[in-house]
Image (tube, rainbow, N blue to C red):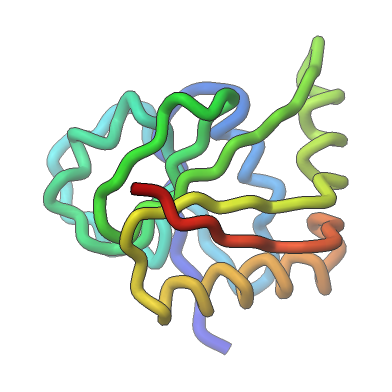
Length: 141
């Protein structure tokens, strides 16, 4: 199995919680602000604040938000809304790990990236990093 290279870009707690996906076949780098370096990753996890700085990156991006108003229609951006109600980091972590539904919203995404998302979450589930019941994709205009 190839190593999955992931960049967590941003300093919000609901972005950094994705560090709990890490397993034996994944390397995760962290970046609070983009510094112009070459981005050689299978996946970048960020929020709407940093999407403009990633305009030259053509790979898969998770645009994570805590409300449904921050959707991007850029190609290969999978918008993910975390409808979590939490008071502290422990509550956030538990809700993230036990999130039953992963709903992704996209305008245009390559089929290989959809397959990658399914495989990524399935692998994380098999390593007991997360628990989920379903993964769904919804097209947005």
